[in-house]
Length: 295
Image (tube, rainbow, N blue to C red; front, side):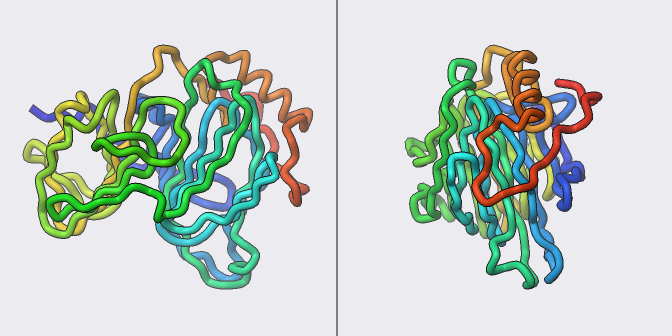
């Protein structure tokens, strides 16, 4: 019997001047563990006149995680942070009660041909921490746990699994794992996972219960303790998961909260421009039309 509960295919979504493939949220599955938003950016080549430019925009109630395969992004936020993220590194920004940030092509790459490819992820905060003070953490690639086992390469980007722990300061039990192989390999990793779990195929494919799945598919498991699959040659997959929250989460635009009241407060705060400003930035992303419902 298959352990796949739901198959989610990437859906195109416009985030301004950039088209991404959206995995979460999905109408039949809003969150997987604490993961409430996953976008696959690219791969795309930007010409000399094109740049990745997301002006200052707000967040509450979540942590954002940026993980690049290609390209570079300059992150600036209301804490005064200014950090360039490159492939293999991790940017982890915890919004808590509220933060604004921008994401742009670094100045030295403007006017050049450049590639962009990566994942942008939101992780909802537990209820007792969703109003915490904002924080920012950057990790170099060398600091991310990586190992080889049975000719398969693993990387623990965030959270804890396989008896290892990532340096990313997560706030609930979770895991974000990269797995790469060269030759075909069957993996049984059920004892290392917990809570809810989903597997995203970036390259190659997997076989499960006689079915083959290719890139751009996100497979949500019925039970993380029954996680066995065969990776086809030269595949790259990512596993997201962790303990689900007991309370519902509401999502409006860039806001995530356990109550509609917190979202309404954040909307008014952004309309009044009461979030700490991002140094060096003068423009911002306006609040979407009020007709957009809280879900």
